[in-house]
Every structure is written in structure tokens, then in C-alpha cells.
Amino acid sequence: MKLVLKTLAPHYRLIVATKGDLLDQERKMRRSGIEAYFHHIEVMSDKKEEQYVQLLRRLEIAPEEFLMIGNSLKSDIIPPLDLGAWGIYVPFHTTWAHEEVDSEPESPRFFQVEELHQALDLIPVPGQNS
Image (cartoon, rainbow, N blue to C red; front, top):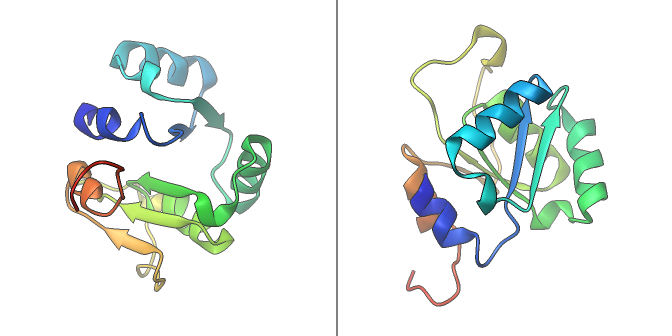
């Protein structure tokens, strides 16, 4: 994960959008040692389309300029895609029952990789060969 963050942080505003208890999520970020890579950390009560609309408005980001990388199609990928954003899905070996969806999105803005570092193959990084 740190390779991806180190590669992208100098060129993009990185944002954490997570769901859960505010204090618990803040504690996890501090312990992880990756907090400094992020421009903004957003702990959401829910991760539905409206919450992403509010986040993008607050940070003044157009949906088509937003890329969400996540391990939940239902919470991380589909809502931003529905707004016109981009999504890279990195499946995790287990998925909570309430996060399961019937099918993958059919969108030219949707991508799937098996490991996080593979997202670097999809994201243009200035000064690096594709």
C-alpha cells in the first residue's frame, strides 16, 4: 500500500473516505503510519451517493475528476460511478453479506485489479512510463 501512496501522493490529492466510528477510524489511521499521505480524511456515517455528492462538493472536485479505489462494490465503487466518477475495485477475500451485490458495474469507468499495486498500471503518473 505504501508504494501506491508514495507514487500517487506527489501528483494527486489523496482522500480517505471510510465508514465507521470516528474515533476508531482516526485511531486506525494514526496507527497505520499512512495518515501523512492524505490530503483529507473523511469518516462517513454511510457511503451512499448523497454522501459522495457532499464530499465532492466540499472538496470542490468534479465527479469525472474523482477516482475511488476500494474493496466494496456496493459502498466504494457503485455510488461514485453513478455520479460519473471512476472506480477501481480491489476485491478482498471476504465480503460482508450486506456489502454483496448481484453483478459488477457495466461502465467504461470501472476497473478491477487483484492487488492494490496493480492500480498504478491504470493511473497516469507524470514522469513515469506507462
